[in-house]
Image (cartoon, rainbow, N blue to C red; front, side, top):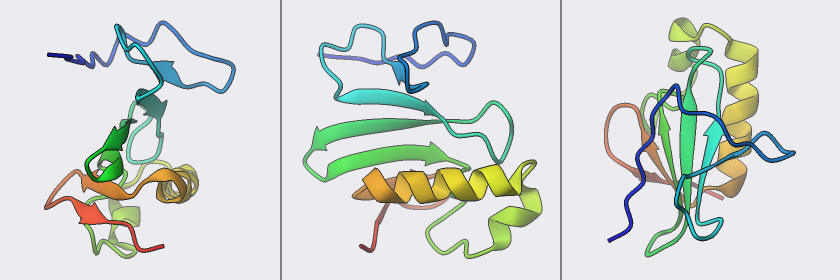
Length: 107
């Protein structure tokens, strides 16, 4: 079984794009992205090649599927969060938000 443990203070390996590779990952299937917005320490975990396609575990980058603009009220860095939300929407087929059920990205 392959396991990935995400430890927030464990950001030690980055590539030139600022992405973090999951320790022990044998491929680029799991990528940890810094997704500043809700707080300055937020991350999202991108998992490629799942039965759902690309799944992003986004935490509070997305509060829930229909958070519209409500996320802005609890964001420390709303402009940066908006950029990161757009970036995640570009790559994700499904998103696991901070609250509520996983949802399919409408493309």
